[in-house]
Length: 562
Image (tube, rainbow, N blue to C red; front, side, top):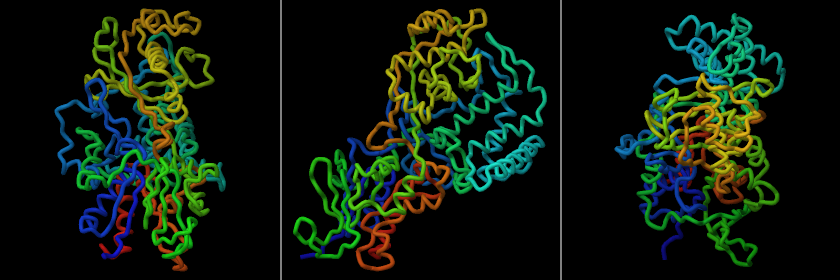
């Protein structure tokens, strides 16, 4: 009788889990050195990668970008499997390469001479926060703005004292410092049915960039995003691109080498039972001896014994799992692990796709094809706010075609707005977006909308469109729901104020932790992978990929298989 093979159970068939399985199988599993299983609670593989179709176009409900093609393992796989080209239209976002149209509430279109200095300021503030150096040949204006960023940092540090500094407070101080040296803040900018003070318009454009940054980081409020951690975060060089054949093609490639039956879908885990003081042959609670230290309990009542379990569930699921009423781990995780889970941030980012009605009459539009629209709104305390624009639209920054001339538009939502989007009906969303566009794209010859307009109170979108003449009508929509999906409970992680990169390292520590010192029980009962366990590439698919490689290699080294 042959020796018992180590059994490895990987929880989650997303990027981290499938990468770990791929690594273990190709390096050792194909030789029969491991008994390997991937168990997935949902009905599909991919996790937060989910390519779909909408309006005849290929779209991404979750992960969208390859963040830098220089050295990215995701880009390398996409090249190898020829996934970067497709005959079917896809969410390539090439509209962003064109000149965007920045429109403020009331139909005021901001000229480049207003938009570009504020956009440059915001970019240089973020570059400063991330420790990026100015490129050679930078203009005098850029160098001056970089000097202002340094001054803003000094002021923030002085005001905060010993408290941790947030990205939000640094950005706001940067804007204030900029205003102190810029003139003509009270001049009027006219357009549409209203006018803005230049200073207010610049602030609205700055807030627009903040809202975009919220979707990049998943921090619903940038005041919760830690300043220090930004300098540890790493990007790959080169352009950021989308995958023509869909992000799911990467997942399918990783899974394609795994034997049939190795991945089991519809296997939601209820509890992971481990034994910090385990030794082979010990008598467990059921009165039987066992030499596998971990027992995975599933929601259908079945169990699976394992020597090693790699947990790749999201940080949102871990946060829910450490609550006393949850008991995802038995015994509970050690304090150093639960404290890291609690301190780190995990936000919600959702995408909204809207298909333009192909039969609509475009007569009277201010555009031939829908523009790359950037949206600027009045502050919450402004008396000039249009009441018909819903609050959940006011913190989304853009609405644009997913490629040039596409009839499918995309908008991103983060934080409370993203959660609200999940609650709203399709009709409520269409009404809210239509009302917003009416205020932004209304024609000059029409009278301005008032909050007392009966059509708006009754939510009659068609009446609103007639009264404004924007001509924008939608046929259908599709939205993601990452916040309320019990298998994810959010989108991706960020380092919150009060946390640090050390917490990301703690997330990656295997259990039992004390066995490294005492040698009293088998090491590596529970291992952790996923984007929230990578110190410099958290929140990304390549971070999840790297973490899967890391934990697979940890096991391979443990068994001298490297």
